[in-house]
Image (cartoon, rainbow, N blue to C red; front, top):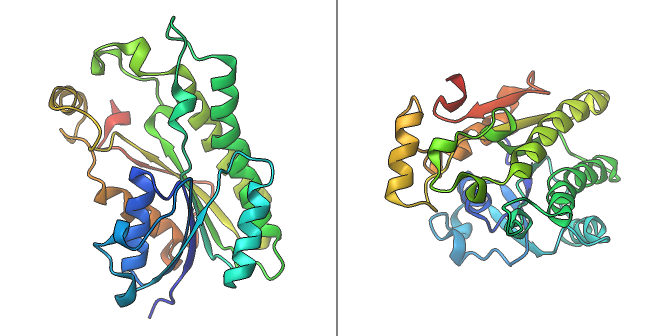
Length: 254
């Protein structure tokens, strides 16, 4: 029998993060949902908390200087030591661009700060906790951390595909490799899941173009995100670290 896990998920109110919260609560795990807004039982109604796992929600802006300490203080208060961390925090405001469709210096810094620096700080803080139980970290990345975007997918390529998004995801992929080496002696595995396009926020024309460019002929469903993350957090992945598990319907093989 697999023991229930305690999993901290950042970006827990986003499309991907909320799907992960639902999945792990339904699996009977304890989930600490960290986001800019409270994650409630009603938001994960497809996975009743009373019948499965436990949900604890912390509202915090991870970009503030004391955010990581707030997370640690909260974990002490609820008496939870996470066995797993899923880093999925996003801030769409950082993807805004200037009138020439180029990201500003502030956008570059904000995207990198949240996507890489804060992710690093939280991993290390959890690893350094007294009585730390951390065993597995999963960073949520993108196919655009591996390949450049395809202009034909977009109506307005320069406007809709900010250059700094993929650059930061590439940095996150390498951060995972670095941490896999540096935390191996503590029996902590660090991996990345690079996702293809997930259905949910695009129109039918975009989906049709995406289908023509992808071997699977479609975008990912939200439910397809959870399986890869669950595997990397499971005992079955005990020999997997420093790996980038690509879940993209074959997009990056072409």
